[in-house]
Image (cartoon, rainbow, N blue to C red; front, top):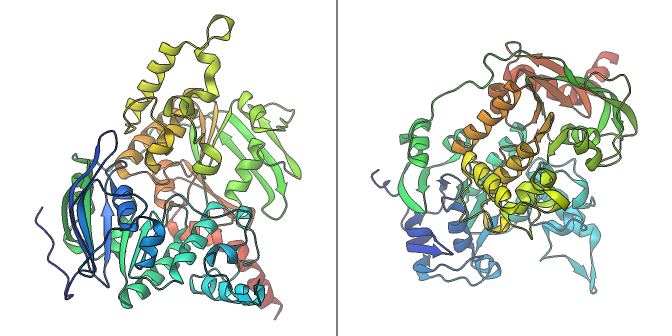
Length: 517
């Protein structure tokens, strides 16, 4: 791949030459990269290709092992994130870095809280936060709300807002849309275009290649820690990007062919929880994949948590396998014992044991299957199981005992998926199963989900990616403002119909007002 011609700018704002990083093994090797003011430069590659490591080096979070950097023609060696931000380099990380007990406003202006006579000027703080939130289309979010009351999607927007208000030369966005729905993505892209027009250089990491084609000026592709090349975005097709990322062809495959829905495995009737889940009823069948779509805050995740016993519902019943008596789960443990699995949307806070390794994170839900007489763990069997799942899901790691925190976000996600697949539950709920996962690994996860349905499992997939749901699912249920607005079978849905259903509860008051007038 030939180098991309330089944009029509006098000089790069940042220049990397021979940048490398070594941990136990070499993860980055000889990276040369120029980033120009007023351009969106996309960085793509499979999980573990080195994208996040390169951005951490640029932002000052991780020191390079070798190579050098220049910022505006001067040597640039940040020793910390504070150093990087002081030089005008800001990074919104894939794993959110918010303080849950503080308000939205406090998180946005954490280092620049307005003061009056030594006390925080809260009215001024909330006014500034409202202005910033309004810029990114979040005017309805109360800046006094504590962050731990928000879902992952709104938290992502708060993290982005905390960077957008600052004056910066370089903005690094690592998977900024992973938890956002289409309207929020459009709002973010509008802000990116405004920043580009203001001369800010933006380094953009995403596994959503369609987005990259929309927003990027140039694309750099990493594979196995090396730079494959850099080209103008307009000169690359999606197939070419994928082929150079993964080093192989990935065909356009269907993941919903030849399946026939069986008996009802899960029935939910009149489920309620506050304003987030309002009278939700649906059935999930064996042998099918049931998708859940909806806007941010529509109640998708809250519905699944109430079913699973992670949050206690105010009313409603859950029936399993055609039983006439409802199952009442007082905790997730009881749900798992009854054959349910839930992969959480927030892997860092709710899905991973960050102090443990791959081995423990993968097998912890099914240790009874690896225990012998007296409850002793059969270590060799455990190793065999872990290695098998590492191979099946192509988890990039040094060994089964590597710390889970050392893996890239996508590889961490694969370990959690493997955990639930190994547990072998009958009803599996996957909330954003491919968040932060590269396109090659997505195909592997899609095949696994399709295989689970073919085996007679009931599979529920919650996703912000409509194309993902339309590729995977036999039926798609659409949530709107806490209600189940519509359910479409394969062949009945279109993107327009799904979006109309997702907006239906929000538009209902407007229509009622218009009708009364």
